[in-house]
Image (cartoon, rainbow, N blue to C red; front, side, top):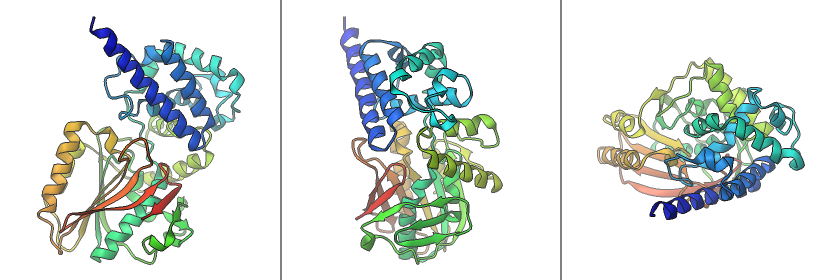
Length: 357
């Protein structure tokens, strides 16, 4: 008798998660994904195939970003030529979205691939959005300005490691330029409130970089590169071009990402803070995928390391993360010694702009 209210509550969680993500897709310029999620939200209400696919999902619906995960599944099938009837709607493979016929084509594909979809949503959407470095850059510049030291960079939730080479990208925005102007990866994040933004004249020297992920992506495999593309929204062609260039650069640099839990890895890497360098631990839109236990241990490891930081071996914790999923993420910076936390900016989830505080 008690299972029915619990099932109803779970159903409402999924409906809310799909509704909120649909609104986000609409605001961020993806009409196809907004429509897809609204169709699936209604299908959940009617206990259709979407509800069947979601049955057995154990994580939180909203915080676990199950709707974001869901979007990538049909796109993956389209990219890999497993859903030709749906492909005619997807611009990423030359299609043109037709709202009138999309519903039937979508649900046919979901019915035929329900087991694939159940498995697909278990993996986090490791978009590795390189344009977010256009927001992170402001934090790096502030750390460089305040410490004057070379960087030892550590990224958690590094996915395929594309943002480990942030210092090699070419940055062009309304405040000026920074980085390697000849790099094929160009980051054009708009900096709003430029009078409050960090100076692009600040120089940064990166001595070393390392990254970890609970499920790192090996870009040397075709399957991994396809999956990376599947998480990019089909109606955002400029993001595909940027991702393609960033993946090639990462392969040229022979980047590797360690397989590790964020908390364990951070504790190990922060056990010693090298003299004459600032250790910069950073991440972007990764924290929502941490378990509660990992998040608690991860933050404890950072704060413990902060107690050992000095002016000669400082520590900076830079993160671009959601404070709540109902608003855009914030760029936060905490530095030791001192441990002061500051909000530097609020930014577009895909890195389109940063609003400096």
